[in-house]
Length: 267
Image (cartoon, rainbow, N blue to C red):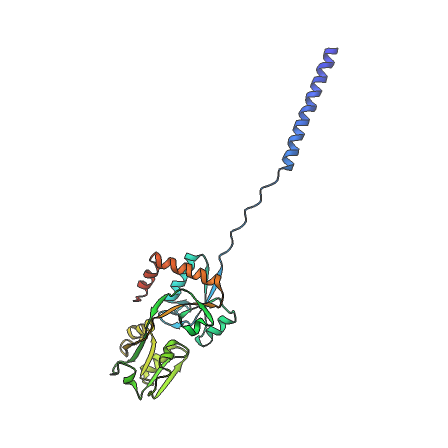
């Protein structure tokens, strides 16, 4: 009987110990903290670029009402390399700088020439490319420089460096300003004016494509210094400026920039 009692007691003791071990195991599992969920990757920064989309081949509207062009493709490539998202907003040239100052967009990508006057009120990226000022005349015009156009009318887009080239030149019958360079070219074709001054990419585009049989390049207007175009940002906006410069340096280093120039037949 004692043996039976001892056996039963041993079995009971083992059962209690087993339950105790199991209970300890369960408590440990309850105390085990779950690993924190991995944080979602931050969305890329969106930078809004204002463009006067009436300036082929640099930026213009296609048949689907999309902003396209050489400089648009450059910025898209810059965005990819620097890790941000680029959006484009069509803005008329005459108010484009005021909109930047008022924070309506982050940057201007619109063939903006980098000048000392502009650098006083906004910051610029590293240069995208150099351009020249070109004198465009009617196909039968004999004048090859500004002096040869004395007594005649000349046009340029208002507020551009093309306009600043001619605004103080004396002897013209009239210096007519336009909101869009295309309107100046139309007047030249109609004979309302006898010449237009425009940036070299634009002058080449109009004289070799749309109006190839009606207008021509008369000459390159000489300048004392190289005229570069760049991306303008609000004064002190280092974050956007650094991203643009990072991407621009990358596409120039790996050949992407040259490929874009080739696609758009840019010199």
